[in-house]
Image: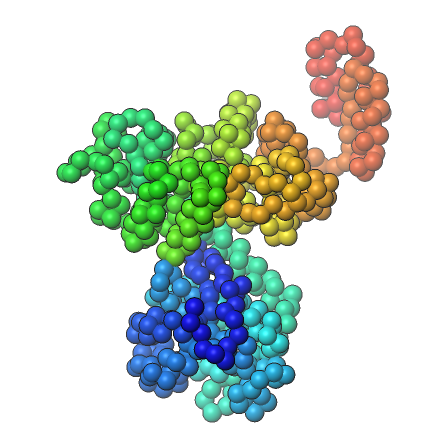
Length: 562
């Protein structure tokens, strides 16, 4: 990358993907001299009013000197970041280090002036708030401890961005301009603001996937059979509430319907006259890039990639997987998969079965997340077999290789989802243990979180998953989950059992416990365990090994009437 000679090396670690307030995504990265054309194009799309707010005067176009100044940074005293979607800027932020008199300075001066510009079409999506979080982190890294910003009083949106950030502030008004000064040291309030923004954005991004207005299955075969056709059949049979489309470039020219389903048929998603919110991608891995491009250009919000041939297949597939996520993010789309089993939402008015499960589970209060399709099948069948009439499912996601959307995203969604009372998770790996612990602890305070952690050798990672092996010993994982308030179980059967118990069993009113059994020894062990956990057990009642089912029935009836 071409850089001016007076700069530090390009800080690649400042690049980040972010989820915005409406659930879409953008990339934040440093601005370079190669962005001159992008900056000019971005500025041309900004309204005259926004330009006035930025420069305090009519400023219809950037001069060559402006373009050079806004694209050439030393990444220490002058830094510019851009939020991008695809190859286009949607917002920029920059800081310039200043001294006590407001003049350009170098270290050890620890104050900088900061300014934003957000394209009008993207205002209200939380772009400026995300940029502020990132430019503040960059500034702290470069020894800057305080930001100053001058804002016109009429620019209420930008004033709100600064005041809502949660930093300690000082405000003054002089010569018709509001001057805001704030320390960049994180406070409890600024951290709370950041995490609340993160939760809302990530939850919204999951909601967009689970409650789409319309779905296209790309790779629906011309004849019955095959993965794409199975997903399409499941969506139809289970009564998905919105428009459905079948897409396959091999459909004959002029074919309008896919028989016998009667679903509108198209050779490309670009041919669909109307929005598509979710695309299920079931084409060979080599064809996926062109499909993703078509989806992005059509405005699709999210992808469920059931196609295999990615990181689970070796180094070449791992590169293909990284490129899939990078390409999807350039269009603001989130990805479930690849190699995914699919997603389910049983809500009335949605009834989404975009999965390989042959039928929609009964609606209920259990949220399910699994990384393995086989485990997902076992979970759904176990609940169907043993939980019929007792407990059902609110939402289900089987994320496959988990290249993008993960269990952390589901915890953000379930935290305030009114349809989910219990979160059940099968995790083969924990990609970001610190964030998982924080989110699990918060969620477990409002609803139970039950986890079965796949047993793997220390330091190994599931084949195909897009996260590095953490190498955390199993005992440490258990302690981590326990401290977060998570209930850890050992098997899928136990996961189902605990889920059924928590979703159907009312909470006891107090700590009193009755113990019935036909073994004196087991009764005493149970009695001691209850005392250890602070409960108040009655002495065990031993019915002896001669007890019949009627003996148990009568004894239970007596206890339940106490």
